[in-house]
Length: 295
Image 1: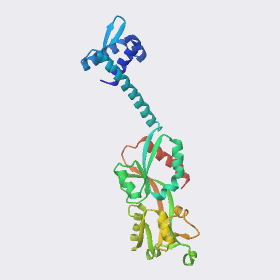
Image 2: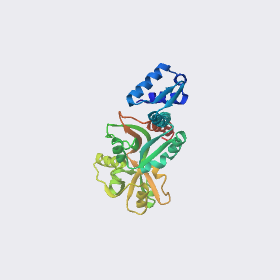
Image 3: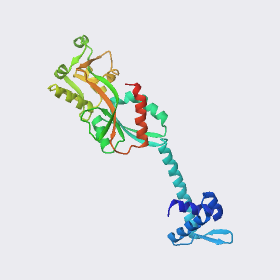
Image 4: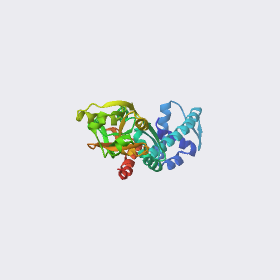
């Protein structure tokens, strides 16, 4: 039994006429008669009895009609929902965002919600490397992460934000006359650094290896504000992206450029050659349009 045959049967009952049903459905009367005969053959029962010009439902016909009306209503709702999804009026977007990035894209999220109010954003706050793994596993549609030359080749990377790295230090006489901090000096101090599941950790450790340095890691954390509070407490110094430093307490902390220049490049990733939902495509387009003004 297909939906078209069910629709023909329901319409014949409603119109109480094969002729009027054919006109309503823009088909010929023989077509409807043939389809209903096939339906009765398939179900092995009589559905309609003709008495003169009147049509009467058998008990089986009554059951098929009542179920048919409900099924056709569900099917119309499904068609409407699919149309909404195709028009990006409805859907779900599973998005991974590192904690440091969230505040920077708050305006982007507001813009996206205004443009697509029917799309539910399911945001997971997690490190960039964890985001990559979950995108590859199909658990997230998209994720934001820090660019790395050895990012998995199965992932497409769309660059969005680029900022220099800075070193956060206590605002005291030892640092106030400095204009920058070298990576060699950074390696000599106790370092407060992100956890290993963050792409920023991977980027910093790669820089130390290239310079043949062994850093003195004092504290690892997944929260930038905790790392900053540890700098305030005198536990060590931290390397953070310049825009994150702008959120810190200027009265107690100072941030200096890291040399040689190290750039924090944040972008959007998704699996190559895989289906992208309309919601995911809408987010990518929104990122391209909106974040270009924030670079």
